[in-house]
Image (cartoon, rainbow, N blue to C red; front, side, top):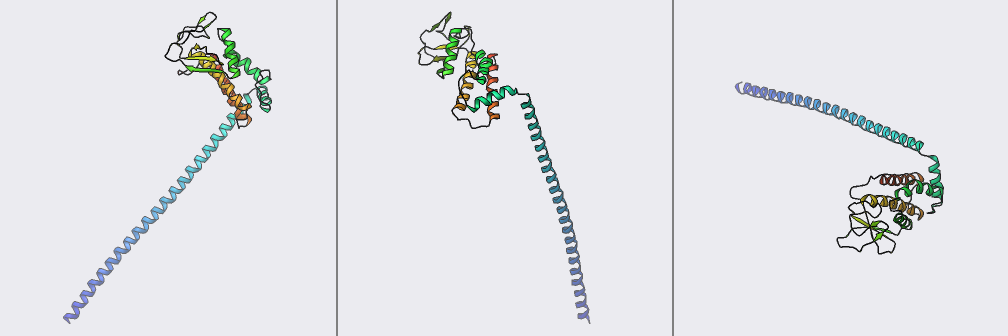
Amino acid sequence: MEIREKGSEFLKEELYKAQKELKLKDEECERLCKVRAQLEQELEELTASLFQEAHKMVREANMKQAASEKQLKEAWGKVDTTLFSEFQAWRASPTLDKDCPFLERVYREDVGPCLDFTVQELSALVRAAVEDNTLTIEPVASQTLPAVKVPTVECHNTNTCALSGLARTCHHRIRLGDSESHYYISPSSRARITAVCNFFTYIRYIQQGLVRQDAEPMFWEIMRLRKGMSLAKLGFFPQEA
């Protein structure tokens, strides 16, 4: 009887331990299920939030694109249709003939005023060299150069601009064609010549078929170059000029 009672108590203790462990496992399973449910909910909320953010970004991008297109249309509305028509006619058969309506306008409004310097004789030579693509601009070397004279202007030092006749520190000089003569020019004069040269370089590229663009971007690039000439003739130029 004593042995049976002890065996029964042992079994009861083991059963109690097993029930206790099972209860703990049930509680752990319940906790893990709650954690999984919480994580699934957080993941669902995060996914929804990311979707909303992505949708918001796409909507904002579309709004910006629409605004840009509206601004572009408004800008086109402000452009002189006559000027664009002249450009299109010139683009159909590019030429460097300044008597065509498009180039005649650019010469009259930009090129001429930009290259109209005080020393008229030298200005005419510079303009001809720019048109012929034979003008060279180079930094002033440290060595002494031979004296070169134009009417009323001494060009043998770097302290006088040969084109304006004003006392200016000249960091560059120009050479016309194959001539060995050099003329010192001020930063302002250099900027004006460079602006015109940039314009001629671009229209030469168009004439040679090197610019592969539609009419609109090509026209706007020409307008940008014309703006550069306008700013240069007003005295606005980069400091490194």
